[in-house]
Image (cartoon, rainbow, N blue to C red):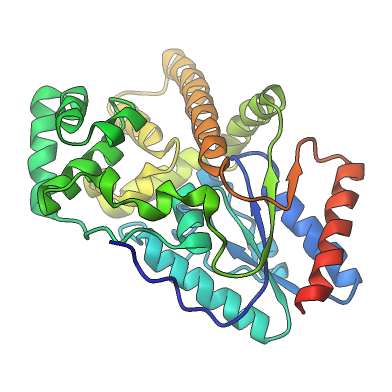
Length: 338
């Protein structure tokens, strides 16, 4: 089963993708500023799966309120932390925003690194069944008793193709694959005609797609440097405020699946049971290292996820020379679309 393509009015978009901490937002702002000098107006559209949540800010490196206003961001801070927004619904909202921006005579610049949300926007997704909370509860009960590696083994029996793609502790995706099998009696991998043919697909609309692809050493250092900054910007305080509002229910929110949030919430609950001490401070440093590692692993998955996308330009080092090459290539394409 394949869903119909998202119905769009004709629009052209600049799309900037790449792993976390690779400089996507900075590049988008620079392009917006320089296009304005050419009398080409733009507005930015968020493609990040977690910047959609209100009050989920520090850990997602969300643009500042000043930047959100200056660059006229769309699809950011649109749902509350306790809500969920599936990829198809989000893609529809992004498409609507791009259509309205283009109707006004401006060009949307779409920025994000969340693979599934990006894919839904660019190509549409396979038509998979909605969540079934009863089945999910049954799967979680099994996982609580026997562990997610056991659930991974169960998935191997019914969908070996999907199981081979997943780590044995990837509970979110294992749960979804088992859920789909229980609902339909068919393996998830047999339903993914769009995903399987991704490299052969055209986008649903004309676009100029820029892929940020820094080398491993550079990206690792960027991530290592950024995590302490996120803490300095109030990440732990943000989690504390969220817990004050939502209590233990916070643990189950989809918004807490953003990298580092679950780990920080666990840390916060632990320190609430004891006074701050030197050992607590040391554990905070260890937590920062852990989040850096998780972020790096996520960045590698993002690069793999985006590998099949057809790019107009790949940015490796983001030097001034490379930036000018991107800008010139973009300026050559825009007149043929407008």
